[in-house]
Image (tube, rainbow, N blue to C red; front, side, top):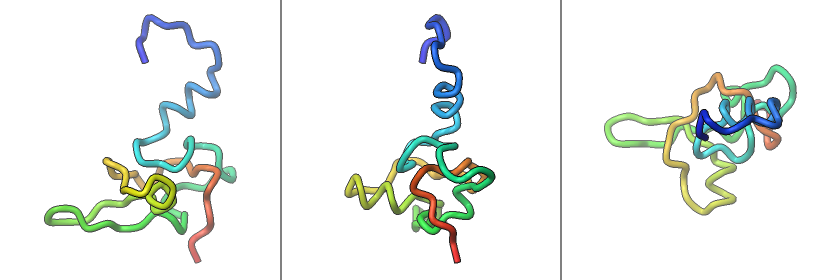
Length: 84
């Protein structure tokens, strides 16, 4: 988003900034105080020589993996399911 544009909805803008490519929904829309690292859908996907954390809910909906890793500390989205 261009810095020259006026922000109308600050709450939405904050969620947009917290959201990473490959998330199933906007960050911060899940239960208060939860993170992607606590979510059932955040899984380790082999990538090159190592592995990265990706959202399996995104994969289920889009039929492919997201392009970027998702930090475990990202505020969770509305599809959050607590990891058992």
